[in-house]
Length: 489
Image (cartoon, rainbow, N blue to C red):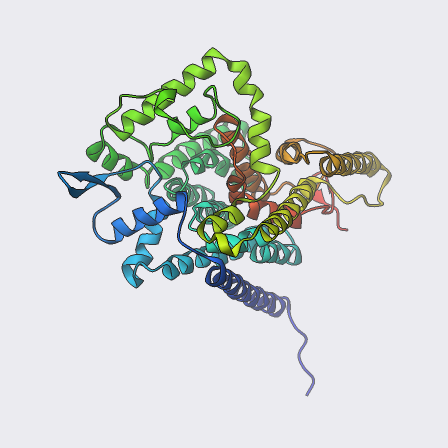
């Protein structure tokens, strides 16, 4: 018998099955890679990872988020919130269920890394053709820096997962016509992300970009009213997961702290007389000699940092390029963390080689991500020639900037990051479509750059935006948009 022709519904069901199979395979592969790296390279938690692990163990043991102080020769648990609680709380769930072995922590991290690849794919699918979305997910799954991060106990992958998950929830629900619901859910997830890294709150206003999905027939007054309502909803829902923790801090600490007590500390590091643009250890002789509590200490360092900025604003501003360079120009933190934990496993030759490899890959993604809003020049109607010329000139300029960044004595890539943050907002003729999924993703890069220009930079901080760089790289050189309509390549 002759087979009946496949209908559009059949094709749609087949595509959904293919995409589901791809997402499942992506998760399994990403999980396996991270578990393998953790099993072969991981050592004791070091640096900030030691404190995250320490906090998670205390939470899992029923002592709450506390540090240990000695009184009369006996250990006493003392409430603590210098670091945000979110990552330690996440690890504590696994410690409570499966024990406090390091293998448990690395499984929890690998799970985050695998989910991050899937969520990046899903977010990309909202804005890109299926093949480009698959490329975005695969880039996150196989990105060597993100894979190596599976052996670290650090917050960046979980922070990225929650922020991108918030963007996806908002965009997906808005596409289904539930714009306010999408903003509410996205903001709530962003509030949870703020408990991991408070900078997540900076992305909350960008959730309002999903309102671009609403009918263009609304009047200007109606649009402004909806925007105001969306802003109130986003702010309230973002604070909903945060305020109970704030109330806890007000109750058990020596003062109120929204999430943690390291903002003043970080501002002082980025502005005091010995500031270099990266982490430097604060000493009692720098200031804040007589403090009795964590909140008081943080407020003291905050006042000290503000005083330094007011006394020498030019010097503070002059440090911004160095801060951005330390954040975006190279990638070495994962190697140094693992080397600190297991020095014998990282002889100098291996250390230098892997650092160089990670840095080269990172720089390639930075360069490619800047092309996300540059259109592939196409032949077309006469009226499209101007847009085509603009996009060709933009592509040439970025190619020249990338060459200069690579060729410099000290390769400098942070200006390309900033260009990539600005391009989506410029109404350049002939550019690719600026979908809310892409615009919200760019906001994570922009707010990360802003935060570390104010405080200080380290290359670990760009790991939060690495999945976005992968997504934007998969978006590079798409077909142009003319009069709101995408021109097919």
